[in-house]
Length: 228
Image 1 (tube, helix red, strand yellow):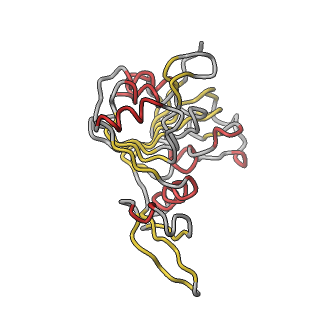
Image 2 (cartoon, rainbow, N blue to C red; image 1 turned 180 degrees about the vertical axis):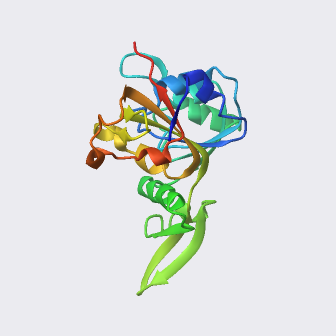
């Protein structure tokens, strides 16, 4: 059963040099309260797997939205992402040589994470054939099946996944709202330890079993989002 933790207790689970998956899309669906605490923790040299690096400014005018806090504080040594164009600080740190960025096609990244969670070695996809994707550290060459070529891409796993749910019950069962489902659901399957931040923490039984999107058996720790 998932365990309740304070934001500060959960942040201490993130250690230097860990590989961390962070759900979200342009900051939507990030675990904002936990990322804020981590950004002040001093942890460094993280490898972060996420869709993107979020944005310097959030929708309500806040500075360094979601993952952007970690980028700004130079706590990330490597990003494995699908795009970074919305965060100019990523380009600046790349040009300085202080941040390594590996770009992966978005659909491929999602499937590589799914494969990691399913215990598979990788995926086969036509995406990226004949492009610089074939030179990626994750590309393992071409495979021909029924006369069609595919690119083999390695599966992705992490030490810790940080996800966000709209409703999470005290057993760790998660419901996502709207597009916040994005990478959160699949990342919850592909890490050794999963921390889930609840927008709303509810009692067991509040969520109908058939509505559970991530079962509590996959969640190790629950934290609550700080209310404004």
